[in-house]
Each structure stands twice: as structure tokens, then as C-alpha cells.
Length: 455
Image (cartoon, rainbow, N blue to C red; front, side, top):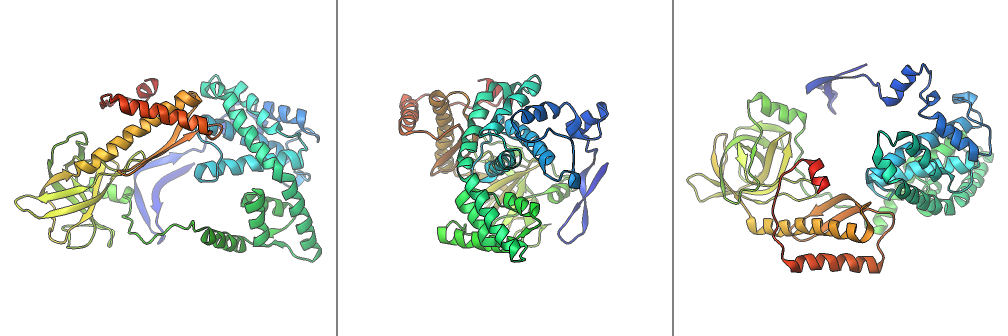
């Protein structure tokens, strides 16, 4: 049991969590092992059907449940890796994630390539054997998770495409790694150079953790510092390093929201669909330099202002926040707002002024830049039209995977088995243009998520 009561800060001090909790660690697999009186999760009927299916294609011995030093040929570990990873990938892809080179997609790609390597290098399984295991997961889990049954063919196609891509370089990468490390060991060296690790990653698609695992199996380690140096040089050459010289207002976390609650401040009333200026009262002022709440702002510095109510839209769901200003009651001077964030119902207006000093209790009028918001709204509507058009062209298996909506452009991320060809792109563009030219009315409805999905 884990009793969670405090948050450990970088300076090693402890702060109380807003709500204490108890983590039993009793997940689905552990609960099943207790009910079935098994010493290991892998001995339950969650995994045994997968081991049986893997054994049919494997050209090695059956699964025997060996671990650690007993598993000298790593065969049992390979069985467990495949069984565990096919479950992860099946559910993740069904939920809309797809293997890629960035973010969560790269996590999936690493998982898949680790499994493919074990399948072919350790279990000696034929090509594309791993993706076939999807059916076993679906067969045993679809009654509780019907979505994986609906998307089974879609999941298999994605996994097969990924397997095929990696298999083209897998044998070459394994051969290169084996020959190079054998030479290093013969010379008495037990550290794989960073340049070799980076080459496997950049030219043969080997995730660094996969290379590290292969090195450990040969009693070696990898030069992680050298790898990162090569990666950094590559990033600089490719001019992909992001500039980080812009000020970023710190996000409100449990400490800040708890402090607001302790002061008796209620979450901000949100009148986002109100197209009139809203009169409000300053309830709290946060100074990012001191990391604390203060009684008033100062000129030039940036502050976070919490009001009792607001009509400004905060950054959410990929859409950027409103901009605008506060007019101080009884004055023509203004406090400029450049960003709006939200945390636990508290809406934080981020801005500054060369003239206005805001204090706790100051009365202000919230003035949204509605001209800018109108441009953002058009692009927001555009994401819905793109989503509709993609589903018309590619089918209903298309799932939104994210979006960015600004006043200047929109970006719509979606999951699909393959990229669009020129003809499909033209069809999507034609459908969207048709909707724009129809000039249909746009209205807003606030409904539960499940109801929105049905419509």
C-alpha cells in the first residue's frame, strides 16, 4: 500500500496534497493472479492464450515461466515481451494513437520495435507474426472492450505496416551491432560508443533503449552521453532546435489552487459565450518572479490575475486563449491580457501594464478582442469541417488525435492507416470548400461527451 499525502518538491521539502489518497497497486492483472491463485501475473489466463499462440509460430522451446538467471536463452522473457506489448498496442491504437516519430506515437513505435526484435531475433518467428497476435487479444477482451473488435482490421494493418518497415533494416542493424560489439569485446571494451548507438537510431530505426537492452544482453553498457552529443549535433544541423528565450508563465499546480481555496476564493464564473463586456472583481494576484500571491501588481512586470468572473476563453483543446484588456473602474487606463490559463476551475489572466496598478478588490471591465476571437472561431469551425470531410473520404475509423487553432491558421491531427494521396487530399478540400460556400449557420450546444459522439 502507498499512502500518498505529500508532494516532494525539488528542494526536497514536502507540501501537503489537496487530497490524500491510498494506492493499493491492485490492478486488473494482480487481482486476477490472486483470484486464480497464481504466483505470477503471466501464469493467469490473461496471458496463457497469448503464450500458446506465440509458441505455434516460435521456432524455439515453449514458455516455461523462467525468470532472471534461469532464463539463460531469454526465451521466456521474449514470450512475456510479446504478450505484454501486443496488449498495449492493441488498446492504444484502438484509442486513436498510432506509431510515429513524436510524442506518444514514438513510445508506441519503440514498444513495437522491441517486440519485433524479440520475435525474430530470439523466438525465430516468421515475418509479420507479431501483428497476428492482435486477434488473440481481441478474442479474449472484446466482450468488455467492444471497440477493439470494431477496429481489429485497422489495428492489424497499422502493425503490419510498422513491422514491414522495421524488418527492412532489422537484420542489417542486428548484424552491424553484433559485428561491432564482438570486435569491441575482443579488444576488452565493454562500452558501446555513442556514435554507434546514434547510427543505429538514425539510419536503421533502432530506439536507443532497444540498443541499450541488446548491449546489456552482451554484458555491455552504452555511452549515453556520447549518444546525446551526437543527437544534439544532429538537431543543430537540422535546425530543429526550438528557441526557448520567450517567457513562459508557470502553470498553477496543487500548491497554488490550494492556496486560493484556503483564502475562500471560489472558482471563476465563466461567461465565455457572452459577447458583452463583463464587470468583475480582482480576487487574487500571482507574481511569477516570487512564486507567490501578492496584494497588488507593479508596472511593467507580468502577473496572473484571478477574477470572480470572466468572458475570456482560456487555452484548451488545442485552441489558443483570448487576448484583450481590463479597464480599471473609473479610469481610462488599461491592463493588457496576453494569455489565459485554467487550473481546477480558477481562470488565470496573464498580462501587464505600464500604467495600471491592480489590487485585490479592484473592479475591472473584461474586454475581449472579439475581432481576433472571430478569426479563431472560424478556424475552430474549420477543424470540425476537416474532421467531417476526412471521415467522408477515409471512413469512420478516422479519429481526431489533436488540433491547434489560432487566429492565423489551424492544424488538425488525425489517426489513419496511411497518409492521404493527392486524390484524397483534393476530395477533402472540395468537401470543405463546399461547406464554406453553403454558408450554413453555426450554433453552439453544450452537451455531454457521449451524446456529442453519437451526433
